[in-house]
Length: 351
Image (cartoon, rainbow, N blue to C red; front, side):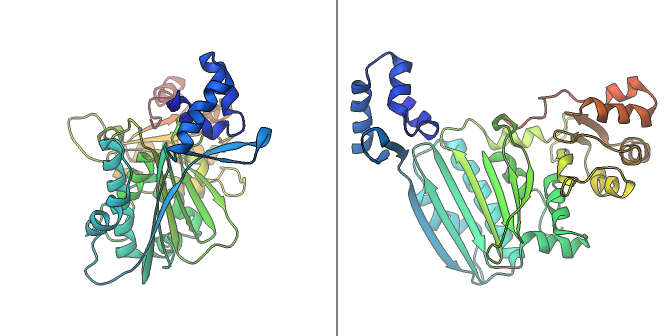
């Protein structure tokens, strides 16, 4: 009963007693005894009175401001400042938290050009959240200037592809990509832009939106359920081609990230932005979810020109509607070939 209450409370703050009573076939008075126990154990708290009573999970929060000093190392900050504050959770989730935190904190140390960094650890009975923020140059602007991109929004598309780094001698460019796939929610806010990644099972996957104002620098949020079954190995394996070798060789790219302010995908220049760095992978899956249509020139550049000039890359597509599929068949002039490039929907979905 208590587990049911905790897991369903976020969706039913005002009627959790009724929902629980219906689920277990008991009286609301009986449910109220469990609610009182959870309140006494400081797992939940109540606001309002009578019929207006609403429950919520008790959130524990720790904020850690730090000055960035020479010799600071992400693993020591994790060990000394963050790990001791975490609640009980499964080992696989703790491993994911360690991986994500150390990768993001290392990016702050190596790239942010900030003098300070802030860390927040928040958790309730269901979730654990890690925040890392700085007052540096801003990650999207940093990528834009280093790679000569026209717009900071292009940096988000490159991050979604993976293998992006401004320091190839010391970084593989895999940290942010894999971190965004390991957590239930991963977001980056910087330069008036926000990049949000969530598993497909929750109905959202890799979206971009603009925000107003915002402090200088970059803020990263990582959130995961304390009982999540996800493992680092499972995520790494999902992006490794099954060819007897190990490594980051497969990527899934949400094509919708290429669309700015509802613009149509019609030109070769847009296609060239999309296919940039595809040659670094053995397999590329283009996810057309949310894309209504594409133009002939765009489709030709991606599915004919790129494929013919890079036969070593296995280019596939998923979640294309009839209009997009029609354009792909048109440029390939071979329905059988077009069908062979169609990936199995769901096969590349994040768990």
